[in-house]
Image (cartoon, rainbow, N blue to C red; front, side, top):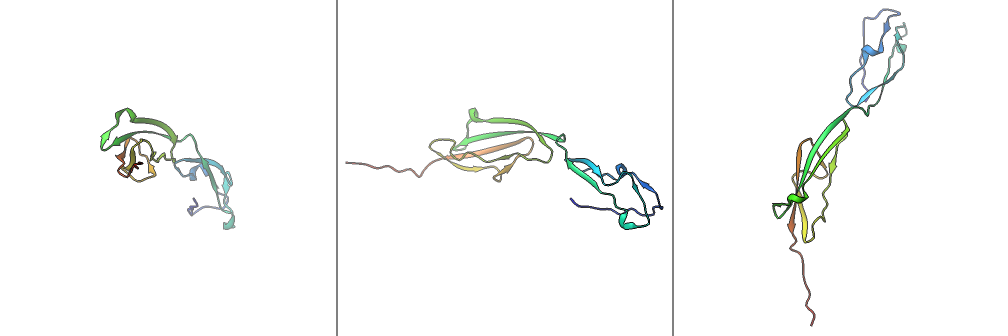
Length: 140
């Protein structure tokens, strides 16, 4: 992210405290400053304060979700999975269904886009239908 702002009406040798110029950036924390303080000079090309940020792994969020599996539109209660995780605030959890979960059934659909970015409290419904593409052979 490269943003900037222009401060004005400063007096020669004014001191700019970089902590007063910090921006809150979700998921990041201040790592260092190019100057501390920045002292205003008559050469405006030198009147530049750079604030460096780094990823802040301590900024987290809790996420809870449930995955329900259906065979021919009937919930397979025993296979319902509930998850709770604490993850970095800018991370996402994705879900890709097991397309071969049930013998004799084929993956049909899920109630949202795949790979699914999971939202807190979401219930993901994965649907399977009975296979109708099977054949047999008779030998004599």
